[in-house]
Image (tube, rainbow, N blue to C red; front, side):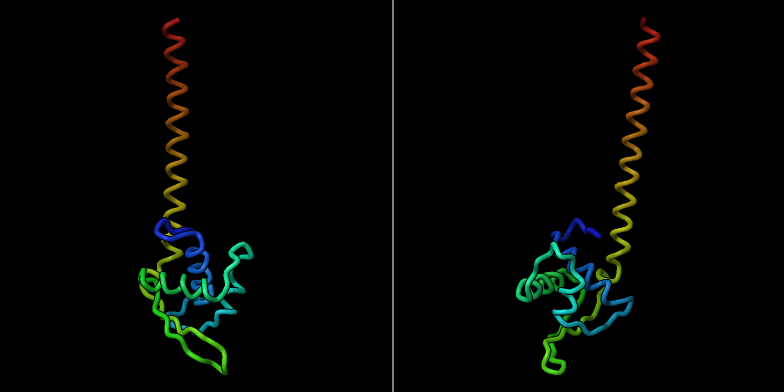
Length: 123
């Protein structure tokens, strides 16, 4: 998933949060759980994860409250409208890219056909 408003790491973290939400609006998650869902290429530590979560919170994707669950740092996450629509926006962006590529391909084929037609007419 990719959102043009977010950086690559923010997209990865938002995808992990959305996956762990499982369609729920409110849920509990530990930093360790979030880091385990992220791809290995993310290479984030808890401090970087905190900064990214705070940035996503400021962008209006969700609200977080830091809590303590059996001595373990835990986030209480409340998804906002932008966070709940994250997958839908990604699907829309992908559809737009495919349509643009198809349009460019069709225009290329038409211009090639027109060029060949003009070549035959003018020769």
